[in-house]
Picture 1 (tube, chains in turn orange, cyan):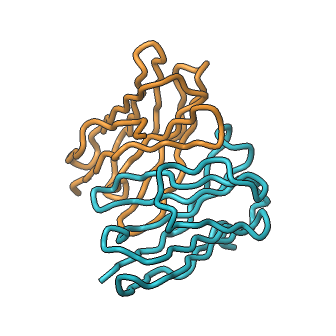
Picture 2 (cartoon, chains in turn red, blue; picture 1 turned 90 degrees about the horizontal axis):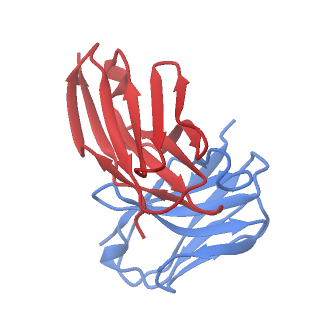
Picture 3 (tube, helix red, strand yellow; picture 1 turned 45 degrees about the vertical axis):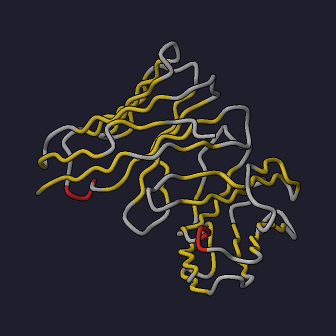
Length: 110
Length: 113
């Protein structure tokens, strides 16, 4: 069953602006991960946040996790045209299971 | 070096045929997966194998049969292909599943005509 749902489905911003996308999920998780998919390519792991963590940073990426609301957000600061891609959250329930949402399609306009 | 490799990258075939997609990982991971991504980009887990043993088999028609000859390989065989099987299939692997990132192959775009 589908576990994560990203919001918005599509996002278009100007280069240099920040992009925020959200993920909601349904059940308790061990961790939540964000992936990026460029058009026609496989998924690339961006960042993992564990259920006992609330915020994590990696370069221009900032991820938050609110387990009480069963939601996470991914913030990309100072966006670049190369950030144009689809972004997916994936939740791990009890191991051996990565459940993905439908993704947010981000377009960064140069 | 390619971490997770799938072949073929593209596969066009007629309804009713049987086809296989191969996947290999050279990362020493214990767990491998198959995902199906439909035209709306929704990624659905199909199978999960841990050390050659089936862990997860989501609601997938039994026309789909995974085969894991060793923990570095997880092949997907599909019998009696249907139009609705057209999608991009991704293989992935990870260490102790769920605690670390998964590495994905580049995908196999299957088109059934």
